[in-house]
Image (cartoon, rainbow, N blue to C red):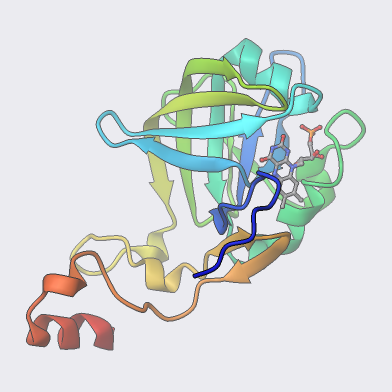
Length: 197
Ligand SMILES: Cc1cc2nc3c(=O)[nH]c(=O)nc-3n(C[C@H](O)[C@H](O)[C@H](O)COP(=O)(O)O)c2cc1C
C-alpha cells in the first residue's frame, strides 16, 4: 500500500439513513433525515443521532428528551430524502410525504412513522455538543417491527425489509450477504446453510 494523506473528514461510510421523528408540546410532529446515527451500546440498548443545532428538530429533541428512529426501506426513500431537504419550520412533513404519526409505548411526545418497517423509541440520556453537531444518545425503551417482517420462529427477517443505507452522498440498497458474524471460523455445512438464505 502507498497512502496519500488527505484532509480528515467524514470518510466512514456507509452509515444507516434514518428518519427521526419528534414532537414538541405546542409543535406539530416533525421528521428529520439523519445519516450520522449509530448503535452505541447493547445493554441497555442505546443509539446516537447527531443533529446540527440550527435544525428545527434539534431543540424539539433537546427540550422533550425524546426521539424515534424510524428505519428506511425502498418505498420510504423519496419521503426520507424530502425530510432531509425541507424544514419542519416551514412544512408539515408528515402531510407533505403522506405519512402518519403513531404514538409509541413509553414516550409522551415523539410519534413513530406508521409506514416505517421498524422503529426504535428513545429517551435521551446524554447530550454532547461536539462542534458542528450535537450528539443525542438515547436509550431504546420500546421498539415496533412491521408484522410481515417476523418469521415463523418469531425472529425478525431483515432480508425482507429492503433497508436502505447511505454512502458518500448516495442512497444504496443492501444486497446479498457476503458473510455472517463468525463465518470465518464456522463449519462448512453451517456456511452453506446460512449463505443459501
Ligand atoms: C441523506 C441525508 C442525511 C442527513 N443527515 C443529517 C444528519 O445526520 N444530521 C443533521 O443535522 N442533518 C442531516 N441532514 C439534513 C437534515 O435532514 C435537513 O437539514 C432537514 O431539513 C432538517 O429538518 P428540520 O429543520 O425539520 O429539523 C441530512 C439530510 C439528508 C438528505
